[in-house]
Structure formats: structure tokens, C-alpha cells
Image (cartoon, rainbow, N blue to C red; front, side, top):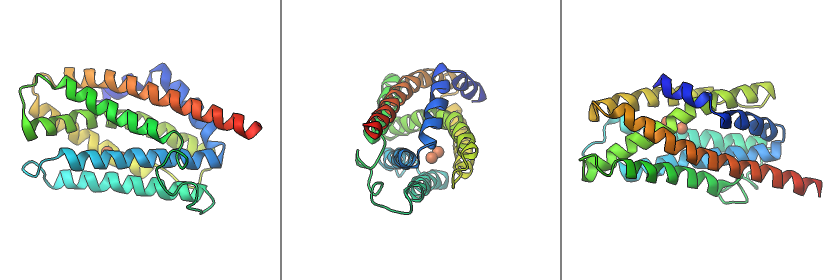
Length: 227
Ligand SMILES: [Fe+2]
Ligand SMILES: [Fe+2]
């Protein structure tokens, strides 16, 4: 799994992400809406799990994963409110005006999900087993990105003296990724590595589209502030 994370860290788009994060963190108003977008993405992850997991396959680890993702959404929402001067107004909901390109976050999650669904079209699994396999593969790809994203974001937060940290979220994501990797190799003993490699390619496309949307949102907000 480290191989995939290392691969992502060297992508040119991660350099662009660093510049984006520096620009976002420098402005509390932008930053509040950005963190609210991250919160929305964590929430979409929970919603997807609730829909995808079948009771016949759901164990304690599966339940804990949902609770921890919901807790990430809550912690990031509270960080957004804190950055917003303690005011809910402006970051109360996950609507477009309360987030920084919130719909792009939705498109990222849906894009990875649909792409992984297509990858598993001929995997030989059906029904709840197929739905669970899609949960595993799409979550693995997203957790690999999280493992590259959150350490970089944490560095930016520290450098700017931000009033919160994402260290504890990263710690959960690292454990989730290890669990996903184990389950993937158990369900797909001979093809897990190839499947994850292809899922990472799909995720990278979705991530780059998300990044473009965030860059545009930051530029628009700077232009409006200067107007
Ligand atoms: Fe999370
Ligand atoms: Fe996670």
C-alpha cells in the first residue's frame, strides 16, 4: 500500500495542491469554507458506506469505520465554525455558498465510486458481495489520497499557526487504509494489487478535476475581493 501512497506523493498535482492549500489557509474566510467542503466529503463517505454495506457482511470494524468518518465530518465542521469566528452563519450547511466548491467534492466521491463500480463489472461477484467489494476498492483509493493529503494539510496548518490540527483524522485514516488493504487481498488474492492500481488511476483523474474546481473557486474569490 505504501507504494501507492508514494506514487501519489510524487504527482505534479500534489505540488499544485500545496500551493492551493497555502493560498486557502492564508485567508480564514476561504479556509472556513474549504474545511466545510472537506467535512462534506467525509459526510459523503459515511453516506456511501451506509448505503453500500450489507447487514450480512457488517461487523464491528465496519460500524467503527462509519462512526469515525462521521466524527471526521463533525470535527472538520467545528473547525470551519471556529475559522468563521465562531459563527455558524456562512458554513452552516453543505450548500454551494457555505462551501468552497462543495459540489466538486460530491463529484469527486461519485466519480471514484462509479469508476470502481465499472472496474468490478467482471469480477465474478454479485449482489451484496459486489457492493461490499466496491466499498472496499473505492474506499482504498480515497484513503490512499487521504494519506497523501492530510500530512501536507497538517504541515500547512502548522506553518500558518491554524487553531486546529488534522493529526487525529490522519491517524484514523492510516488504520482504515491498512484494514482496507487486508480485506482487498483476502477477497481478491491474485488481483488486488492490479485492481488498486487501476482504481488509483481513476481516483487521480477525479482528484485533478476537484483540484481544478478548487483553484477556480479560490481565483474567483480573490477576484471578487479585489473588485
Ligand atoms: Fe475520514
Ligand atoms: Fe477513513
